[in-house]
Length: 116
Image (cartoon, rainbow, N blue to C red; front, side, top):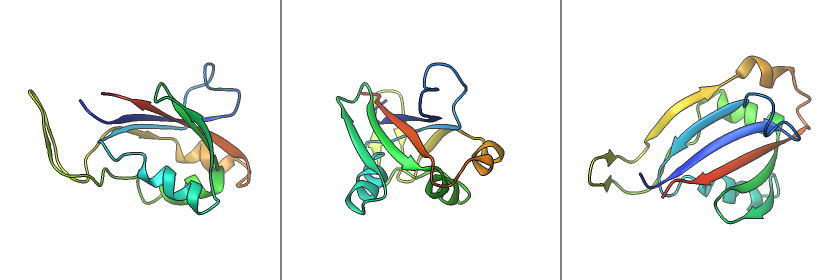
């Protein structure tokens, strides 16, 4: 599969606690993070795809997740054994209850793992 796998955690909990959200997306799956960085909402901590790391305020992520995780916006992708249509998302898990308990200004870690 070509795309990204995302994990959202509290800072310092990346290897300890269950994630607050996780999902998979297609090729352009990180576009939403790039937009947030450009808008000054998120901070790009860098990375090489294994993973790329960002900080995003909990309140911003909560508002976004209440509408659903970001969709893959790229073109239809046909692989050897899969089809990935525009808007595709997979394995979506979001803990809205835990997100609502957080300070909206708390920066959360978003990891984007390259799946190619």
